[in-house]
Length: 199
Image 1 (cartoon, rainbow, N blue to C red):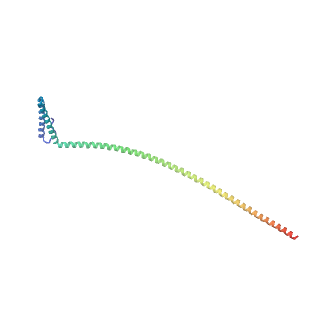
Image 2: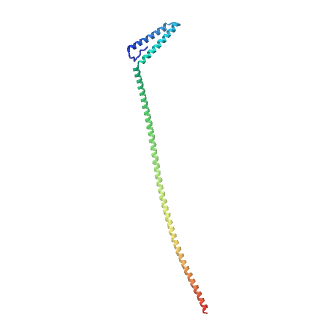
Image 3: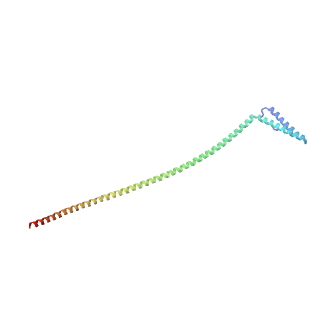
C-alpha cells in the first residue's frame, strides 16, 4: 500500500504504513494458505476485519491531515474563485457588448428620428409658406372685391341721387304746372261768372 502523505508525525506514519503492509501481507498469506471449509471462512472473516481495521486506520490518518485538507480546500476555493472571476469577466464582456449594441441601435434610432423630425419641420415650414401665400392671395382678392363693391355702392348712390334729383325736378314741375292750371281754371271761372253777372 502506498505511504500516506501529509502526516504530522513521520514515525507514526511509518508505523502505520508498516502495520498496513503487514496486515495486507498476512491477509495475502492467509488467503493463499487457507483451505476449504472453516479455515477459509475464518480467513475471510479475519481478512474482512483487518480490511475494516485498515480502512478505519486510513480514515483516521486522513482525518489527521487537517492542514493539508485545509490547504486543499483553500486551493479549491481559489480555483472556484478564479473560475467565477473568469465567468464574471466573460459575462461583463458580453454585457458590455450588449450595451454597446443597444447604444448603437439607440444612436441609429435617434439619428432616424432626427431626420424624420427635420423632414416634418421642412414640410411644416413649406406648408406654412403655402398657407401664408394663400392667405395673402385671399386677402388681396377680398380687398379687390370690397373695393369693387364699394365702387358699385358709390355708383349706385350716384345713380340714386341723380334719380332722386330728377324726380324732385319733375315733381316740382308737375306741382308748378298743376298750380298754374288751377289758377287758369279759377281765373276762367271767375271771368265767366263776372260776364254772366254783368249782363
